Amino acid sequence: MPAAPSSSTHVSAINLMRGAGILMIAFGHYQPGAAANVLFLFHVPLFFFLSGYLMRLKDHPSHYFMRKTAAHLRPYVAYLVLLGIPAVGYLLSEKDTLDVLKSSVEAGILGGQALTGIFSAFWFITCFWISQQLLYFLRWHLPPIPLAVSMALMAALAFANDYLLADAWLMGSANVALLGVPIMYAGYLASRHPTLLRSPTLIWAALALMAGSATAIYQGAPLSMNMKYSHYGVPVISLIAALASIVVIVNAAEWLVRCTWLTTFSKQLAYIGQGSMTIMYLHLLIQWQFGHWHIVAVDMLVLASSVALPLIWHWLTNQFAAGVFLLHGRRAHA
Image (cartoon, rainbow, N blue to C red; front, top):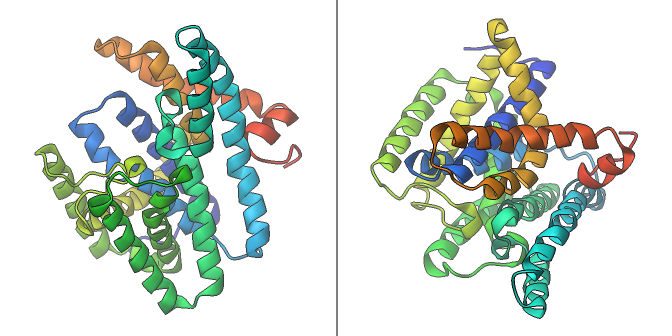
């Protein structure tokens, strides 16, 4: 059985997983198809899982609310304005002014599924923030058994939303939190039971389930997820397959940081993970700007640029107090 990672290794592994997750998201958005469908099964759930894995009950819920609101919603609003003004300006030159302004303001207020084009990925931020708040509040107030029951009920409601009210959604994709919270809770449970998470038996079973799910998705099975539109695949089975894939990714990341001969690669992937939220905001801007050329060399260049350019922006804005405060959701001295 592998030893539990040290704290420094643990942090590096988290950044590695964030880096891998955002690369999969960028690829999935640019190259739709069977491979993207496989990645959609677990790349967004991975971020929810990691949030639960790292969540600690240190602050009062009111303090947690303020801290996470600054961390997530301040950059969310800043990027909506930063990208929205030129986007609306372009649309005004093409369409009726009143209709453009009305639809743009409505989309900005509603968030979630209303955000399209270069803003399509923004749904994740509000849903992620809502999920964090709900899980923290429930963990603060509920003992373990009622907490577990509430997670099961939320997951059941999420699948009911998918199958019975497929077109129903809430502002900021709040309805998707019905599944986001249980996935975060699974991450919390994993942090409480690290030995089980790293059990060879579980790892091999998870790897087999991951491979089987990927094969089934390639063959057209409806196992994949699209969380933005509350499409969660096959009830329970897709969720289990997603969590199994995440178990594999967690253990693979922890193995990777122990491989000294892959240190350079690990550092680069971890740096991508540190800038994952900036990439989340900006990768579609680059991909939509250049479009799909369907030429392998050009597509690879566009895909690489949709990660590299946001990373440069991430580094640059970190050099200025205003950038740290507005775009990274931190105090300038943090």
